[in-house]
Structure formats: structure tokens, C-alpha cells
Length: 196
Image (tube, rainbow, N blue to C red; front, top):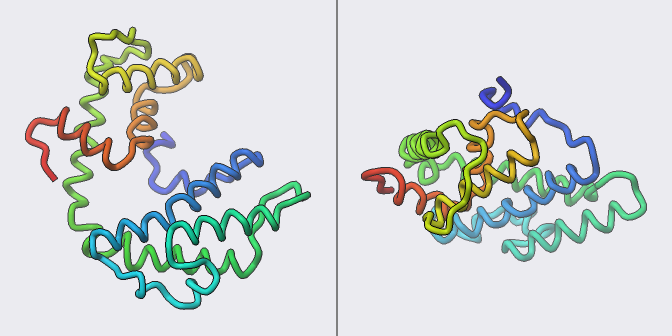
């Protein structure tokens, strides 16, 4: 099953301009935001970012987002594809590699990995149990906001995909769309004894 293949999503090539926009938007949204988050928790300092990257992309999330968006717009106008300039793309790849080395794979970032993995699994099974293999659950005003959000999402996916999508896939999509803050709140509210 594809949803269980490690790294499968990275092999999927966008087939439309719209899908390409989504792929690029994701990179643009997280690459600088992750730097800001790492600075807040103290795992890096802004001056740690290599100077050659800063000269092209900037050193703050706002600068990086602005540079990447403007560059892709300027280099994609009147073309049937999306494109960064060569020097911006090279700086983006360098920044991504740097982020992996100093943020994502750092000791600070991976110290709670086992706790988070268990939290993802427990929340996944908690949601499945709530849904009881039903793809459509009537949303009731008496429900908690957590349940309303879950059931509304599953109901919208049921309409979108009819019966072609496994309920487990829908739950995975639901969890993957949560912000870190919302995910942790859901874990605290739904997993007995959860603390991070």
C-alpha cells in the first residue's frame, strides 16, 4: 500500500501547474519558518546561516519568502512551467541541505522523536476508534470542537472521494494538516497521560 511506503511522496511528480504551485508553496512556507522556530528554541542563531545563502535569500522568514516568491514569479511569467532563477534555486537547495544538517537532524530536533512517533500513532488510532470505520458521521452542535473538526473533515473527504479512499488515509490526511500547536493540543486532550 502506497501510504505505508517510506519516502513515496517525494517520488510523486506534480502533473499540473496547480500541483506544482502547491509543491513550491510548501517549500516556500516551511524553509524560512523552520529557521525562525529553531532560533526561538535556541538550536541555532541567525548568524549561523551561511553568508552565501543570506546574500541571495535573506536571513529572516519574511525575506526568504519574499525572495522566493518574487523570483519564481519573475522567472515563470509567460512560460508553461514554474521556474526559479538558477542562482536562487542553487541557494534554496543549499539552504534546504543546511536546514537538514543543523535543524531537522540536529540533536535538539530529534530528542523527542520517539515521543512524537508514539503520539502520532496513538492519536491516529484514537481518531479511528471515534470514527468506528464510518466515513460519514453527523456533526452535532453538542460535540466538542475537536470532534466537530474531525468529523467535518472526514465528511468532506467522503463527499470528495466517495468510497474510493480508505478511512485510514483520511485520518492520516487530517493529522498531517494540523499545525504543531493543534496537534499537541489534540494529543493532550485525547491521549491519557500525554505530556511533551
